[in-house]
Image 1 (cartoon, rainbow, N blue to C red):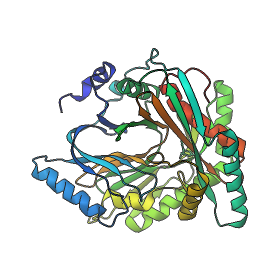
Image 2: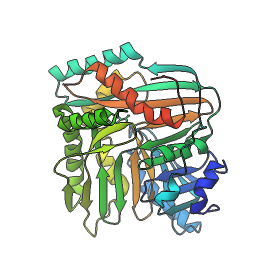
Image 3: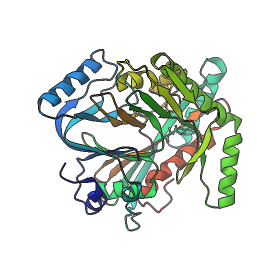
Length: 391
Ligand SMILES: C=C(O[C@@H]1C=C(C(=O)O)C=C[C@H]1O)C(=O)O
């Protein structure tokens, strides 16, 4: 790679890094990649997907790359094509926390020229009401419904500067910047679907949310209320149970924290559970086998999965694309990391799409789901330095 890791902050701050650069940082691994050697764009559920991945790695190795990787994004709907590439150049390093969050760029700001929600306020409330009515006569337990905020900004977004600001404001998040065909998918996700390191698997599902508050005492109260909330604990349990049952047939042993803990981002509180599993030494699973079995979890889709997915398709007026899908990387040995594509934006020049979803269960209320989804958009609103009250 032409830029060594320690000068990353400087290069991104001075705009040397281009919008065609892929970056994924988990604070365990920092992966940067540039250029296209090969593209993979079939759905992950295609019967020949794993074979295509293997062929691609073989070809990369025969081109003289001893450690090829695949980087990119997997959509919410696994029947849609992935956007994965084998890059021309890549590097994977262990990041040093001190050089990862260069600074919060106070001068980075944007004005909003136009904005619109899909669905807008009233239809969003109607969508949640329809979901609540469904709980009464179907076996649906939870469905995650989302909205999109389309913004037209006063100027073209400087992607490297936005990325530096995302990292500065959210040092503990999974940072990503992924070039798509006509846009860049960029964000700071708090949620890890899977990290695979040799025969160890880690997952950190979140579900159950509360907005952070300015006043320290009120903020602490909000966290306390979330921890005690029967509704949020139920929403969370559905996710953990689903991950447990999808991992069970593939692993030798599994450790799941008995109780969820509270985690915070600069804008939200969440209930979080750490899951760790060990695979049999002679296992031949690829990381994509785990993804196919785990994704989409009830944190992004609902319970039961297929029924919830049908309801999402009927109720949401928009296509999710890569939102609530996955962003990450993997190598030919089956190691890799995939974060959930939330708290992110799709940026194309001065056009920005923000996305946020919320888990709806029988105790949900339409207004609070509207407020929760708006609060989740704050991560990216703050990263763009948008000061006026758009949400
Ligand atoms: C869907 C999103 O967030 C997810 C939904 C959550 C919830 O419903 O409480 C919490 C964290 C995430 O798993 C999002 O941020 O858009």
